Image (cartoon, rainbow, N blue to C red; front, side, top):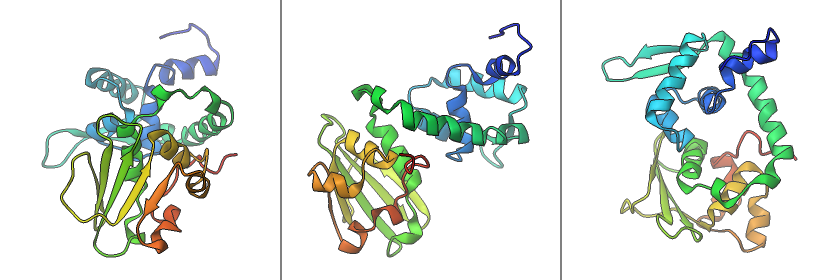
Length: 223
């Protein structure tokens, strides 16, 4: 899209104003995703064709560097210096969104698979005891795929939507909306538990310090 203006905002919008582009940059800069499959998971409903097109556009615009994965099929995408300079811009947009757009959230905006992807990336393995931990989430507002598991093995964290057949260390029972609101800072674990909209079963040391082993969103502190 070209605006035919010399205004720097217009020229910047020609690069980052296309649908999905700024979210792709978010995944690379804020979430640290570099591979196509990770980007696709973090973006949700984007088609592979459109994601490929947007990545190509960003590479041509000098915002990304595309590198072959050594010894494997596929590529990785890394931010250039110009892309890195967008980090404070994205954080400012996110902060503005936390202040002014929360009232616009609808049930369609709450997605269990996307939420679990965010929670997977938020786990701090070294804060969990032992070499392996299993965390089960049960979402009462989901007719299908209401149970999800996070499997923590060493520094690796995987998401599962089928029973992995392992002993569960922590059970979290709530809704997708409430868990999303807790993660983004719209409410807190303590308040949700007091309201009986969220329950956690497991060792008290882990229940009382959830935020130490599962980080919240980078925007969760914004009031």
